[in-house]
Image (tube, rainbow, N blue to C red; front, side):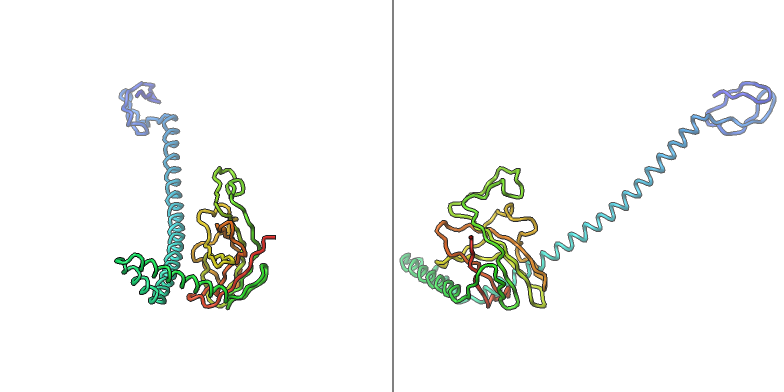
Length: 286
């Protein structure tokens, strides 16, 4: 680059790296500082500002990422703990149920062992099925029956059926929570929807799961699968939902029953492990 001596006006050539440095004029031996171009100074400042902004953004990004990661970890940890607790309770219920029915298992094994005589095996199976059906019907027939909208207390659990609706043979897509969907659900029988309020009147947490319907012929129906789109938001009942003391919960469920099912009732209980106390609430579709 070219530099001009301020004393004798002699033009001299100096390397670029001498900018800002003090040199001597080759003509008059005067010492002077090589100036730094203003454009270079502005570019340097701009680069410095960009680097600083990038560094600040990087630090903020790492801080936010760490915070979100911690929140996600806590949420996942809480969810996993709840699922593990529910699975453990379900496992205990199944173990107790299996321990409670050894005689039934023995009868089933003996019936299956008679493979050399299909006629006898079929007869034993029919007898066993008849006994189980009779036992179920007898249990249902002994349970007290209440009217819909009554507050029914079973041990330390309060139940109330808020409403019931016969939805016919079709759950229309337009009536689901996702009305833009084209997928309706149909049945050869009819869909029955109930709205239930339940409250734990005890002092310890209980778990509540889907209820069964019973008709006047003693047939028992579990809730239908794949119908959650037609259940109001926040009224879905998940497997073994927690029910804390004195915190009423409202949920809804949909059932698929035969066309000839009449006298439908909801079977409720004390939500204990053994289900010692039960009652029935008759549905009214008027």
